[in-house]
Length: 423
Picture 1: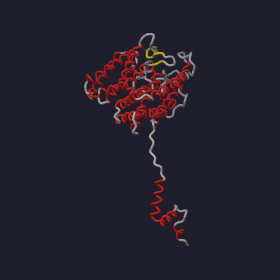
Picture 2: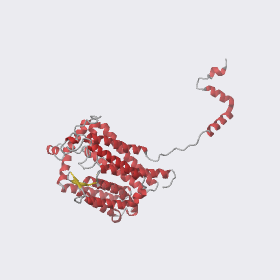
Picture 3: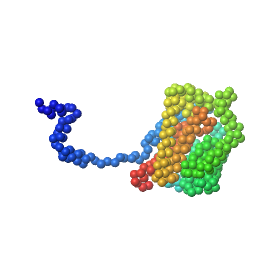
Picture 4: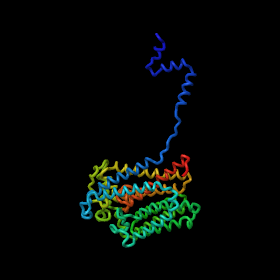
């Protein structure tokens, strides 16, 4: 019997090839290895031009927002306030807002980051003028007792939303230019404090305390990340808390909201100042784990005010349940995380303005989403803040998209430099 066939059958682990190799010797192995190496085409791993997962997270929030705005607003036409509107009115306007926002975002993506650095003081000053203009009779438009909008035909523009973006780039530029003075109160802290106080006074005149809180968080958050003196920052936080307490104490309306927040189920509160909060909590309770399904919300049927704007998260909780809420939280977490990482990469590449601007966007989106969700869940007092990229509102969607476009541009430029290219 052939010993080769007995101990090394052809169909057992390919050992026939081993027998041939042993006969050919090491020289045959070397020649085969050499032929294999020379036949392999040398390739480089390709880095994407942009952060695909970040883009998908943003688009996912926009699409979820589109569906939920329609679901939350479809029954508004049945009420007396919107009796002259069709059931698709808010959906159509939201689609138009999304189309404008995406178109503007594509244009903004093409603008180099250095342009925002150069013109940030002008943009900030222009936005301050808009905040003044919105208070002038005949120019500003009032809704529910607040004058925050300037009519522009297709949409009512809200200057406070532009101010959030202006605060990001102005604070980043200011921090870079005043880097050597950040340990000085007079030269480092005071000028920014005056600018924020001016903006705060104009926003409180509208009134829009929620926007003022976000702008202040952006401005001083960027200063903190830029290396401001810890003692000065601690004093700033203390002054901010005292100022907030004084504003609440001196305003019967805000004081009533605070008391209602602390005990929303008290009979008088549940029927007045705590009405929105109690119905928001009931919406989350009804949603349980997996929700009632799209369109199944009961609270949106004229029970929960502003269900398509400030309290859209409650409708999401009722229709999509705990799982839907967790998905929303994860998408915002991913955007904020990526923004901080993009900012850190920019700082490592010695791009100080770009790095601080990216982190400023993270502060903006992260804090506003946290405040909106906190209000809906009863963790924070009621504030008039929308959920970024999700809630109905042309100005908010537009400026959120602009911020995301600038963030993607910063990431795009980072990738060019990491490849060894030049800007």
